[in-house]
Length: 327
Image (cartoon, rainbow, N blue to C red; front, side):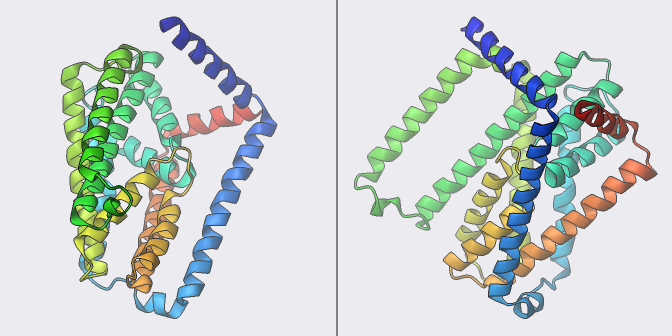
Protein backbone atom coordinates (compact mmCIF):
# COMPACT_ATOMS: atom_id res chain seq x y z
CA UNK A 1 0.00 0.00 0.00
CA UNK A 2 2.80 2.42 0.91
CA UNK A 3 4.55 1.67 -2.43
CA UNK A 4 1.34 2.40 -4.33
CA UNK A 5 0.87 5.71 -2.51
CA UNK A 6 4.49 6.65 -3.25
CA UNK A 7 3.97 5.97 -6.97
CA UNK A 8 0.77 8.06 -7.02
CA UNK A 9 2.47 10.94 -5.19
CA UNK A 10 5.42 10.84 -7.59
CA UNK A 11 3.12 10.97 -10.62
CA UNK A 12 1.19 13.89 -9.12
CA UNK A 13 4.45 15.75 -8.48
CA UNK A 14 5.52 15.13 -12.07
CA UNK A 15 2.21 16.40 -13.48
CA UNK A 16 2.33 19.48 -11.28
CA UNK A 17 5.92 20.19 -12.39
CA UNK A 18 5.02 19.79 -16.05
CA UNK A 19 2.00 22.06 -15.66
CA UNK A 20 3.88 24.76 -13.70
CA UNK A 21 6.69 24.84 -16.29
CA UNK A 22 4.34 25.08 -19.26
CA UNK A 23 3.45 28.74 -20.02
CA UNK A 24 0.71 27.73 -22.48
CA UNK A 25 -1.00 25.53 -19.88
CA UNK A 26 -0.89 28.33 -17.30
CA UNK A 27 -2.30 30.86 -19.77
CA UNK A 28 -5.06 28.42 -20.77
CA UNK A 29 -5.95 27.84 -17.11
CA UNK A 30 -6.13 31.60 -16.45
CA UNK A 31 -8.29 32.06 -19.54
CA UNK A 32 -10.69 29.31 -18.43
CA UNK A 33 -10.94 30.87 -14.95
CA UNK A 34 -11.76 34.28 -16.45
CA UNK A 35 -14.32 32.79 -18.81
CA UNK A 36 -16.02 31.04 -15.86
CA UNK A 37 -16.24 34.34 -13.97
CA UNK A 38 -17.59 36.16 -17.05
CA UNK A 39 -20.18 33.40 -17.56
CA UNK A 40 -21.34 33.61 -13.94
CA UNK A 41 -21.56 37.41 -14.05
CA UNK A 42 -23.52 37.16 -17.32
CA UNK A 43 -25.98 34.71 -15.76
CA UNK A 44 -26.46 36.95 -12.72
CA UNK A 45 -27.05 40.05 -14.89
CA UNK A 46 -29.62 38.06 -16.89
CA UNK A 47 -31.30 36.98 -13.63
CA UNK A 48 -31.46 40.56 -12.36
CA UNK A 49 -32.90 41.83 -15.64
CA UNK A 50 -35.46 39.02 -15.52
CA UNK A 51 -36.50 40.02 -11.99
CA UNK A 52 -36.31 43.75 -12.71
CA UNK A 53 -33.50 46.05 -11.61
CA UNK A 54 -35.88 48.58 -10.09
CA UNK A 55 -37.58 45.92 -7.98
CA UNK A 56 -34.22 44.51 -6.87
CA UNK A 57 -32.85 47.94 -5.88
CA UNK A 58 -36.06 48.74 -3.99
CA UNK A 59 -35.69 45.44 -2.11
CA UNK A 60 -32.16 46.04 -0.79
CA UNK A 61 -31.83 45.34 2.97
CA UNK A 62 -32.57 48.42 5.06
CA UNK A 63 -32.16 46.99 8.56
CA UNK A 64 -28.78 48.09 10.08
CA UNK A 65 -28.51 44.70 11.82
CA UNK A 66 -27.99 43.07 8.42
CA UNK A 67 -24.83 45.12 7.82
CA UNK A 68 -23.54 44.67 11.37
CA UNK A 69 -23.87 40.90 10.97
CA UNK A 70 -22.01 41.09 7.67
CA UNK A 71 -18.88 42.49 9.36
CA UNK A 72 -19.18 39.99 12.21
CA UNK A 73 -19.43 37.13 9.73
CA UNK A 74 -16.48 38.45 7.73
CA UNK A 75 -14.06 38.19 10.67
CA UNK A 76 -15.29 34.90 12.13
CA UNK A 77 -13.13 32.82 9.76
CA UNK A 78 -9.78 34.63 10.21
CA UNK A 79 -10.26 35.00 13.98
CA UNK A 80 -11.07 31.31 14.43
CA UNK A 81 -8.08 30.34 12.28
CA UNK A 82 -5.79 32.27 14.62
CA UNK A 83 -6.69 29.85 17.42
CA UNK A 84 -6.56 26.89 15.03
CA UNK A 85 -3.10 27.54 13.64
CA UNK A 86 -1.76 28.59 17.04
CA UNK A 87 -2.13 24.91 17.92
CA UNK A 88 0.65 24.06 15.44
CA UNK A 89 2.46 27.34 14.70
CA UNK A 90 4.16 29.48 17.40
CA UNK A 91 3.31 32.78 15.68
CA UNK A 92 1.97 36.05 17.06
CA UNK A 93 -1.80 36.51 16.89
CA UNK A 94 -1.47 39.82 15.07
CA UNK A 95 0.71 38.29 12.34
CA UNK A 96 -1.61 35.31 12.00
CA UNK A 97 -4.64 37.58 11.69
CA UNK A 98 -3.06 39.45 8.77
CA UNK A 99 -2.07 36.16 7.15
CA UNK A 100 -5.57 34.68 7.53
CA UNK A 101 -7.22 37.81 6.11
CA UNK A 102 -4.94 37.60 3.07
CA UNK A 103 -5.60 33.87 2.73
CA UNK A 104 -9.33 34.61 2.77
CA UNK A 105 -8.97 37.22 0.02
CA UNK A 106 -6.97 34.85 -2.20
CA UNK A 107 -9.48 32.00 -1.75
CA UNK A 108 -12.51 34.20 -2.42
CA UNK A 109 -11.26 36.45 -5.22
CA UNK A 110 -8.48 34.52 -6.99
CA UNK A 111 -9.23 30.80 -6.83
CA UNK A 112 -10.11 28.17 -4.27
CA UNK A 113 -7.04 26.91 -2.35
CA UNK A 114 -4.79 29.71 -3.68
CA UNK A 115 -4.99 31.00 -0.10
CA UNK A 116 -3.38 27.79 1.12
CA UNK A 117 -0.49 28.37 -1.29
CA UNK A 118 -0.06 31.86 0.15
CA UNK A 119 -0.20 30.44 3.68
CA UNK A 120 2.59 27.99 2.84
CA UNK A 121 4.77 30.85 1.54
CA UNK A 122 3.95 32.88 4.64
CA UNK A 123 4.84 29.95 6.89
CA UNK A 124 8.21 29.47 5.18
CA UNK A 125 9.10 33.10 5.86
CA UNK A 126 7.85 33.42 9.43
CA UNK A 127 8.33 29.97 10.95
CA UNK A 128 11.35 27.87 11.81
CA UNK A 129 9.59 24.67 10.74
CA UNK A 130 10.62 22.62 7.72
CA UNK A 131 8.76 22.99 4.43
CA UNK A 132 7.33 19.48 4.83
CA UNK A 133 5.94 20.24 8.30
CA UNK A 134 4.34 23.46 7.07
CA UNK A 135 2.70 21.61 4.17
CA UNK A 136 1.43 18.91 6.53
CA UNK A 137 -0.03 21.50 8.93
CA UNK A 138 -1.92 23.28 6.14
CA UNK A 139 -3.06 19.94 4.67
CA UNK A 140 -4.27 18.55 8.02
CA UNK A 141 -6.25 21.70 8.76
CA UNK A 142 -7.90 21.50 5.35
CA UNK A 143 -8.85 17.87 5.98
CA UNK A 144 -10.43 18.73 9.36
CA UNK A 145 -12.19 21.76 7.88
CA UNK A 146 -13.61 19.67 5.05
CA UNK A 147 -14.79 16.92 7.40
CA UNK A 148 -16.44 19.49 9.67
CA UNK A 149 -18.25 21.31 6.87
CA UNK A 150 -19.45 18.02 5.37
CA UNK A 151 -20.68 16.92 8.80
CA UNK A 152 -22.64 20.17 9.18
CA UNK A 153 -24.03 19.86 5.64
CA UNK A 154 -25.18 16.25 6.11
CA UNK A 155 -26.72 17.14 9.47
CA UNK A 156 -28.68 19.99 7.88
CA UNK A 157 -29.83 17.68 5.09
CA UNK A 158 -31.08 15.31 7.79
CA UNK A 159 -32.98 18.20 9.38
CA UNK A 160 -34.49 19.12 6.01
CA UNK A 161 -35.62 15.53 5.45
CA UNK A 162 -37.21 15.18 8.89
CA UNK A 163 -38.91 18.59 8.66
CA UNK A 164 -40.48 17.48 5.37
CA UNK A 165 -38.87 20.07 3.07
CA UNK A 166 -37.14 17.18 1.28
CA UNK A 167 -39.56 14.26 1.04
CA UNK A 168 -37.55 11.23 -0.08
CA UNK A 169 -40.53 9.05 0.87
CA UNK A 170 -42.02 9.97 -2.49
CA UNK A 171 -39.03 8.33 -4.17
CA UNK A 172 -38.31 5.41 -1.84
CA UNK A 173 -40.88 3.08 -0.28
CA UNK A 174 -39.09 1.77 2.81
CA UNK A 175 -37.39 4.95 4.05
CA UNK A 176 -36.45 3.63 7.51
CA UNK A 177 -34.49 0.71 6.07
CA UNK A 178 -32.67 3.05 3.68
CA UNK A 179 -31.75 5.43 6.54
CA UNK A 180 -30.32 2.61 8.62
CA UNK A 181 -28.49 0.89 5.75
CA UNK A 182 -26.91 4.06 4.33
CA UNK A 183 -25.96 5.29 7.80
CA UNK A 184 -24.24 2.02 8.73
CA UNK A 185 -22.40 1.78 5.40
CA UNK A 186 -21.14 5.37 5.59
CA UNK A 187 -20.00 4.91 9.20
CA UNK A 188 -18.14 1.68 8.42
CA UNK A 189 -16.45 3.11 5.31
CA UNK A 190 -15.32 6.26 7.14
CA UNK A 191 -13.91 4.31 10.08
CA UNK A 192 -12.07 1.84 7.83
CA UNK A 193 -10.63 4.59 5.63
CA UNK A 194 -9.53 6.63 8.62
CA UNK A 195 -7.79 3.67 10.27
CA UNK A 196 -6.21 2.46 7.03
CA UNK A 197 -4.91 5.77 5.70
CA UNK A 198 -4.49 7.92 8.82
CA UNK A 199 -0.70 7.63 8.92
CA UNK A 200 -0.48 8.51 5.22
CA UNK A 201 -2.96 11.40 5.17
CA UNK A 202 -2.71 12.85 8.66
CA UNK A 203 0.13 13.89 10.94
CA UNK A 204 -1.52 15.67 13.87
CA UNK A 205 -1.79 14.00 17.25
CA UNK A 206 -5.21 12.90 18.48
CA UNK A 207 -5.28 15.66 21.11
CA UNK A 208 -4.49 18.39 18.57
CA UNK A 209 -7.00 16.92 16.15
CA UNK A 210 -9.80 17.02 18.73
CA UNK A 211 -8.98 20.61 19.72
CA UNK A 212 -8.83 21.85 16.12
CA UNK A 213 -11.97 19.92 15.17
CA UNK A 214 -13.80 21.49 18.14
CA UNK A 215 -12.78 24.99 17.02
CA UNK A 216 -13.82 24.30 13.44
CA UNK A 217 -17.16 22.83 14.53
CA UNK A 218 -17.87 25.78 16.83
CA UNK A 219 -16.99 28.20 14.06
CA UNK A 220 -19.21 26.44 11.53
CA UNK A 221 -22.17 26.35 13.90
CA UNK A 222 -21.79 29.99 14.97
CA UNK A 223 -21.09 31.23 11.45
CA UNK A 224 -24.03 29.41 9.86
CA UNK A 225 -26.37 30.43 12.69
CA UNK A 226 -25.41 34.10 12.22
CA UNK A 227 -25.78 33.69 8.47
CA UNK A 228 -29.35 32.47 8.93
CA UNK A 229 -30.08 35.40 11.26
CA UNK A 230 -28.69 37.83 8.68
CA UNK A 231 -30.82 36.35 5.91
CA UNK A 232 -33.90 36.31 8.16
CA UNK A 233 -33.37 40.02 8.91
CA UNK A 234 -33.25 40.79 5.16
CA UNK A 235 -36.15 38.51 4.15
CA UNK A 236 -38.37 38.05 7.21
CA UNK A 237 -41.23 35.57 7.58
CA UNK A 238 -39.26 32.90 5.72
CA UNK A 239 -39.42 29.37 7.22
CA UNK A 240 -36.28 28.26 9.02
CA UNK A 241 -36.14 25.07 6.94
CA UNK A 242 -35.64 27.14 3.78
CA UNK A 243 -32.67 28.96 5.31
CA UNK A 244 -31.24 25.56 6.25
CA UNK A 245 -31.42 24.63 2.58
CA UNK A 246 -29.62 27.86 1.66
CA UNK A 247 -26.88 27.00 4.16
CA UNK A 248 -26.46 23.56 2.57
CA UNK A 249 -26.04 25.20 -0.85
CA UNK A 250 -23.64 27.75 0.65
CA UNK A 251 -21.47 25.01 2.19
CA UNK A 252 -21.53 22.95 -1.03
CA UNK A 253 -20.42 25.91 -3.17
CA UNK A 254 -17.59 26.74 -0.78
CA UNK A 255 -16.30 23.16 -0.88
CA UNK A 256 -15.93 23.10 -4.70
CA UNK A 257 -12.16 23.10 -5.32
CA UNK A 258 -10.44 25.70 -7.54
CA UNK A 259 -13.68 27.64 -8.07
CA UNK A 260 -13.18 31.40 -8.61
CA UNK A 261 -15.57 33.97 -7.07
CA UNK A 262 -17.62 31.53 -5.02
CA UNK A 263 -19.89 34.30 -3.73
CA UNK A 264 -21.06 34.97 -7.29
CA UNK A 265 -21.78 31.27 -7.79
CA UNK A 266 -23.79 31.21 -4.57
CA UNK A 267 -25.62 34.37 -5.62
CA UNK A 268 -26.67 32.73 -8.90
CA UNK A 269 -27.71 29.53 -7.10
CA UNK A 270 -29.55 31.45 -4.39
CA UNK A 271 -31.62 33.41 -6.91
CA UNK A 272 -32.54 30.23 -8.80
CA UNK A 273 -33.43 28.49 -5.53
CA UNK A 274 -35.64 31.39 -4.43
CA UNK A 275 -37.58 31.08 -7.70
CA UNK A 276 -38.03 27.33 -7.20
CA UNK A 277 -39.26 27.86 -3.62
CA UNK A 278 -41.60 30.75 -4.59
CA UNK A 279 -39.80 33.17 -2.29
CA UNK A 280 -39.55 36.96 -2.60
CA UNK A 281 -36.95 36.66 -5.34
CA UNK A 282 -36.27 40.40 -5.57
CA UNK A 283 -35.50 40.55 -1.84
CA UNK A 284 -33.23 37.50 -2.04
CA UNK A 285 -31.44 38.94 -5.08
CA UNK A 286 -30.99 42.31 -3.36
CA UNK A 287 -29.67 40.64 -0.20
CA UNK A 288 -27.14 38.52 -2.10
CA UNK A 289 -26.16 41.40 -4.40
CA UNK A 290 -25.37 43.70 -1.47
CA UNK A 291 -23.47 40.95 0.34
CA UNK A 292 -21.34 40.16 -2.71
CA UNK A 293 -20.62 43.83 -3.42
CA UNK A 294 -19.62 44.55 0.19
CA UNK A 295 -17.47 41.43 0.40
CA UNK A 296 -15.59 42.25 -2.80
CA UNK A 297 -15.13 45.89 -1.74
CA UNK A 298 -13.81 44.89 1.69
CA UNK A 299 -11.55 42.24 0.16
CA UNK A 300 -10.12 44.84 -2.22
CA UNK A 301 -9.53 47.38 0.55
CA UNK A 302 -7.83 44.85 2.81
CA UNK A 303 -5.76 43.42 -0.05
CA UNK A 304 -4.47 46.89 -1.00
CA UNK A 305 -3.72 47.67 2.64
CA UNK A 306 -1.81 44.43 3.19
CA UNK A 307 -0.05 44.62 -0.18
CA UNK A 308 0.98 48.26 -0.33
CA UNK A 309 0.27 50.19 2.84
CA UNK A 310 1.44 47.43 5.19
CA UNK A 311 4.04 46.38 2.59
CA UNK A 312 3.70 42.67 3.32
CA UNK A 313 6.95 41.04 2.07
CA UNK A 314 5.50 37.54 1.81
CA UNK A 315 2.94 38.66 -0.76
CA UNK A 316 5.71 40.14 -2.91
CA UNK A 317 7.64 36.88 -2.59
CA UNK A 318 4.59 34.90 -3.70
CA UNK A 319 4.12 37.14 -6.75
CA UNK A 320 7.80 36.90 -7.67
CA UNK A 321 7.62 33.09 -7.49
CA UNK A 322 4.56 33.08 -9.76
CA UNK A 323 6.36 35.35 -12.27
CA UNK A 324 9.49 33.21 -12.23
CA UNK A 325 7.42 30.06 -12.85
CA UNK A 326 5.84 31.62 -15.91
CA UNK A 327 9.20 32.61 -17.44
